[in-house]
Length: 229
Image (tube, rainbow, N blue to C red; front, side, top):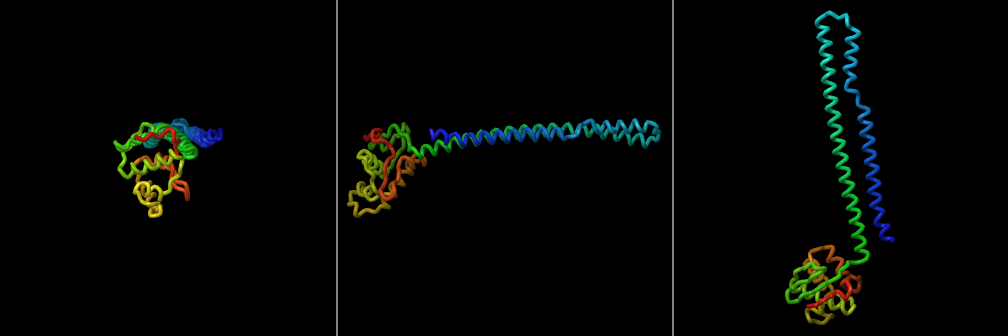
């Protein structure tokens, strides 16, 4: 229940934050459209000038009034195009914002799942180590291994079957055949690092092989799912 609550908190935050921004965007768009002047305002004022100066007979003055009338028509057309451009930009911003909210939501959910996996450990239902083919199948995902990686994983599997934590020195000793007193902890750590590199998937390898401080390494899976061939 606590995990579900923790999972829902960032998701709700993203959703409510997205809704707030969307509402703010819609309000800003409405205010912007309402604040734009009417396209016929200029034409109405030019028409009023014509009405107030109907006694004009000078051709130059009449031409000036005609230019004003044409300017009003041009202004109305430009303003209409501006309205269309603003509308398109608002729709584009709305779509981009929806996409951003969606990706933030999925990212928040994914992060919570990863945190939950790190907290509870990796759920592996099957680990089959095939020494002859130098392969390991983890939940039906096959990984090719080198000889050193194969030996390292074999020792880890045997230690897990015995419910033991194996140190780096003991790991090196089991593989090399020497005494643990003659082996260094760093040698075993190097073998673990190479095994993780061969498994490829960083999340998988880090969660599968856990390091216990001052004790050693162990596989974070149930011994019942391990099969050695």
